[in-house]
Image (cartoon, rainbow, N blue to C red; front, side):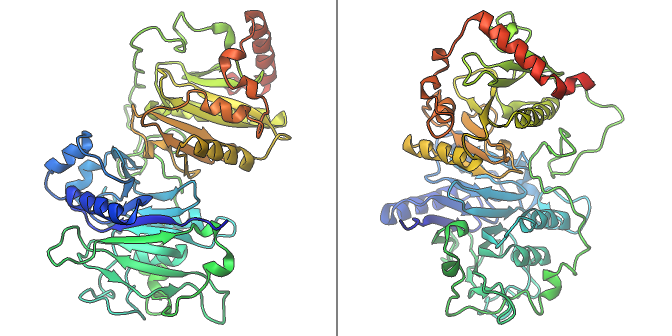
Amino acid sequence: MAQKPLRLLACGDVEGKFDVLFNRVRAIQKKSGNFDLLLCVGNFFGSTPSAEWEEYKTGVKKAPIQTYVLGANNQETVKYFQDADGCELAENITYLGRKGVFTGTSGLQIVYLSGTESLNEPVPGYSFSPKDVSSLRTMLCSAPRFKGVDILLTSPWPKYVGNFGNSSGEIDTKKCGSALVSSLATALKPRYHFVALEKTYYERLPYRNHIVLQENAQHATRFIALANVGNPDKKKYLYAFSIIPMKLMDAAELVKQPPDVTENPYRRSGKDAAMGKQTPAPEEESACQFFFDLNEKQGRKRSSTGRESKSSPHPKQPRKPPQPPGPCWFCLASPEVEKHLVVNVGTHCYLALAKGGLSDDHVLILPIGHYQSVVELSTEVVEEVEKYKATLRRFFKSRGKRCVLFERNYKSHHLQLQVVPVPLSCCATDDIKDAFISQAQEQQIELLEIPEHSDIKQIAQPGAAYFYVELDTGEKLFHRIKKNFPLQFGREVLASEAILNIPDKSDWRQCQISREEEETLARRFRKDFEPFDFTLDD
């Protein structure tokens, strides 16, 4: 069966004209059917406050399509983008972040870089630096069998893009644009590259990404610059297209060259830009893109520019966790906690056996203080959660198992990060991923794939309801809960025939055992886990 193409819309500078844009989208969808996503480049907000935006922000009005936007390009609009690593701005409107990769469950890969080029330090909150471009390039190009990406979103034009192509009109591409964006486009080989800011429409002839007779054929790139929404000259600001994700395409079909394809614009006179020679050699930085960097700099909070803040000579006291509104079954200090199930206690988190678990070693990672979800955790708690996750992965691997983590922030008051071990002999990680996606589709639940080096803070605000799965490979699946959601969905998928094959255990209430049996299982787990217990090192 042929893969069904995704139907996407791309838009130039909105500049606060939200009603104009979304009314136009509604008209298009009424005439041509629904589209899957709207991608906005350039200035999403205007330089002056907008009463229109308040209506979308407060839910009085709603975008008719899932919309993803880039960040600020000037100081006046930085205030709208509070989280440098992306967040939900309003229902159906999401800020992608300063830089990173967004991957849908279809496999479509969208790379984004917010802001304008800056070679000065410190880099303003509305700009990107050589380090930002270098980290994106390193993260993607170092992947095995890297061929390119489906879509690249930047606000500035790439310098030299007009070389060998059709006329770019009044825009002189030898002077206008960013050499860093040229460098990024050269390395990432996007199938589509969308830009804005110059208040004009320019669709360049497609260009090739290989040298004829010297390299194997590769796919072509289509570059499209879009005008500003509602411009008086009626220049094109909205671009509709269909695309099948690169990873799902037949190789021969992917590399077919359009009849009007040209040479790569960055390869000759643009060569210095493509090689990054016009800018200082960027220092490599972590390719991670989330607010709490969870690699070797675990848990240190970064500033709004995404850079790590320097230590103060007077370090701040740890933030006191919020207090529960009433009795809580999971706050460790609460008398309601079934303490016989607790198997390990750290500084900020603890482990407990799941009541009515899917297996004897099904455990929960829980914060000691009262936090509702992962999104709301403080820095030090995030650090210890990650430590427990890594330790449990090693522990279960030593026992011939891989672990699946999931969280349901819906009809719950205290974060419960479920950790379910799955024997390696049962199935592969891809089988687990496929089971979640297929069962989600059956129940009309949209599971989005977010990359390994991204975080749900990009797409979920504190208080937002969501379901989240993390596989042992680091792959993550996310669903934003809008209305109803099956409370046992995570258990049902893992208990299904495709994975653990214990469908009768999908409801924890059917799996409860006596207190004596629970105490026996807890003693056994504590003993087995002791050689891996990092809290003993403190």
